[in-house]
Image 1 (cartoon, protein in one colour):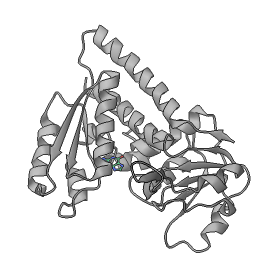
Image 2 (cartoon, protein in one colour; image 1 turned 60 degrees about the vertical axis):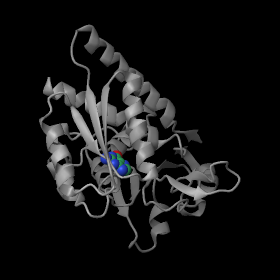
Image 3 (cartoon, helix red, strand yellow; image 1 turned 180 degrees about the horizontal axis):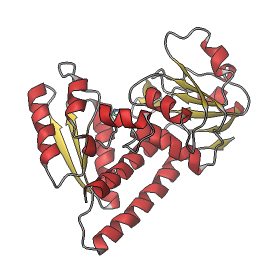
Image 4 (cartoon, helix red, strand yellow; image 1 turned 30 degrees about the vertical axis):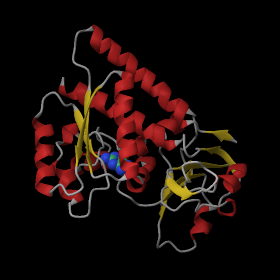
Length: 291
Ligand code: GUN
């Protein structure tokens, strides 16, 4: 069993990007600038956004964090987005999800300039992606493709089961892995909360991407020997033996699944760090488009 080490791989990617930033600076040019909007004080979202900003500092990007209170109106948020769209100093920006319930997420994502949409969530970028056209790829699926490529995991002709149909992970993952591409060319099945006999389907899978948001859902008796496991889930599970009172668990029961797996991503240290690295890669690409 080989661990797909997202922490190490993301550090490799960040070093590659930092090298490019050095060259940009050496030429006396402007370094990439990423902005992030966070609405409210959701613990996990604050952690993710801070990690994104910190990663920018580490590799030499400029970054701006726009921290808005939970009761921010949709109109004020849309105005902030307009300001970032028209600010020439900003190459790309993200609006951290989820948003408070009183804000229409779709309206917000559609307000982002598609050329600055480094999350790849704007319909223009989703449409381009689905049509095999160059676009910003959403960071989590992009990170999974990169991890599979760098570990030279064969995907062509394989049975891939994507668990979950979210706009951020499951849906784009299912599109990307069916495309003619490296880490693609697969036969893709999407399973979700309404799927019947789910375990019968996962047992046929050569590769499973688990992104359903239920901790330790996928058990050892639901997979075949030699399966490749990509665990996207990250949930806080109460644990009194830990000083902070919880542990982080994926959607996969690592203990029962890992002995059967040929490759598996750990949680934490698998897909999560890759997401941040690919967001940075998209920001570098956004700067290249604009300069
Ligand atoms: N919430 C969970 N994942 C993501 C992501 O990749 N981007 C944004 N903006 N919000 C998220």
